[in-house]
Length: 252
Ligand code: BV8
Ligand code: ZN
Image (cartoon, rainbow, N blue to C red; front, side, top):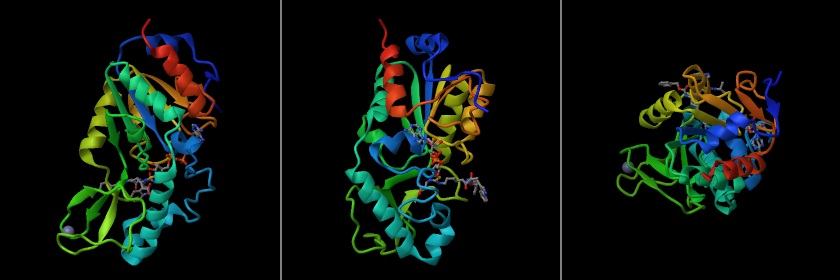
């Protein structure tokens, strides 16, 4: 059952908060990249590039068949490299540019927020565009879409490289998650965009913000497990809803 405030038009309270100068926290999931042509975990019927990520985005899958896991990630890198940031990504970067206290915490690994200009950003689940050595731990950025041969190996120690993403049953990066948690406690306004709010502990942030007294707005064409808790639910695609909200956010 959606929250009492499910609609397509923002409330006057939300507009007032957007015009204000209070701390804003934006939480995003795969839905914010949907209009860039990148399938979400749910829309593709729980499949990414035709495979079940729950089976592949795990340390066990990587240990069992690194090349198979690498083909999955290489396909997603290639797909993400040819995708473009959409109006939702750009609206979030524009909201940051208004100069108010701001943080974006994303579960996404596709790099589209960065390409849209977001700077005050924490990546809760890592990035497709960073590789980590399973031997010496060296981590570096690697933007070339196709990695040949798979799996890639470390120039320094020769061990196999892995994508620097957070797999299921792996802990989130403490510094990034800590920054998101303190922003959830300080935020006056939280926008929860394009996430089914099922993956923890990332999904705990929106509840933490509510409990700390923030006004928490969900932007999602569908209802989610969070919708009944949200202060307001704008039931539309992020690429349409966010630009309209941000237009209201500019002072004057
Ligand atoms: C952890 C990176 C503990 C990789 C991802 C057993 C053992 C240990 C842990 C667990 C366990 N059982 C469960 C857990 C916890 C587990 C978890 O939550 N599982 C879920 C499935 C129940 N969590 C973990 O394992 C986490 N780690 O708990 O560690 C620990 C602690 C200390 C020490 C050791 C261990 C790690 C979780 C991170 C996993 N990595 N991604 C990769 O990408 O390959 S998760 C991945 O899936 C994403 O990052 C994202 O988080 C998640 C997908 O969720 P969404 O982004 O929400 O996407 P989804 O498709 O679901 O929804 C899209 C939404 O968009 C929909 O609502 C749709 O309506 C909407 N939408 C569609 N179009 C639009 C739109 N919205 C707006 N506009 C549109 N146009
Ligand atoms: Zn190494």
